[in-house]
Amino acid sequence: MQWLTNILQPQILALLIPVIGIIAFFGHKALKSHHQHLERMEKIRKGIDPDANE
Image (tube, rainbow, N blue to C red; front, side, top):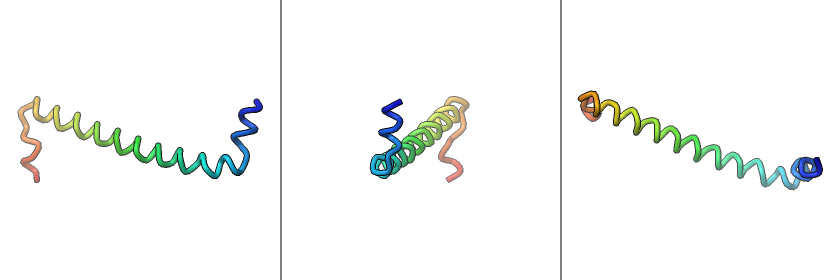
């Protein structure tokens, strides 16, 4: 449990929280983009023009 005590120190958390936030932000954007790509590919497979709405 020594590692947990080290991580919970304020000077470590001050660096760790923004790094985790940035990773989570870009991870979310990547997953959202991947999901949109899968939806577009499924529309193409079903014969629907995905660009017709734009």
